Image 1: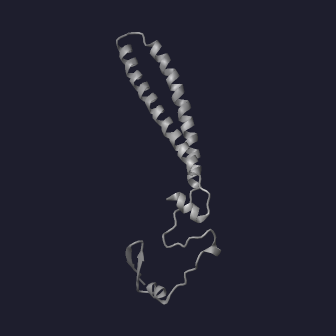
Image 2 (image 1 turned 90 degrees about the vertical axis):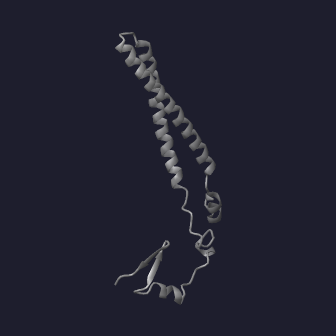
Image 3 (image 1 turned 90 degrees about the horizontal axis):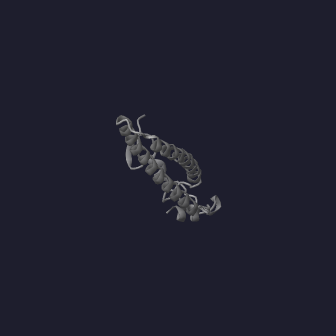
Length: 138
């Protein structure tokens, strides 16, 4: 839909780059969430070991490394989110179906208002705004 619309408008659209970026972002988010779940499970285990007065130093050391991985991944996710937002800003809005197709104003056909159009918005008449009937109040 977007690619077809951009082609009609003569706008370059790089959806393949967006798809690759989105796939990377989703994969990294999934991996990071798995690491966070592992860290949470280990935190419960550490608490259990300490309550039982057992040594938890090895597990604590492992979780420090996991926490560092999570921090790095969260930073990368933030970068990917920013890049994705920038790409989304380059995608133009989809024009209404009534908008003529053309790459520039010269190629578009101008619609000339009719007497019916001017009567439609006369004082005291009703308007149709996006399917919602409204009445002008003077």
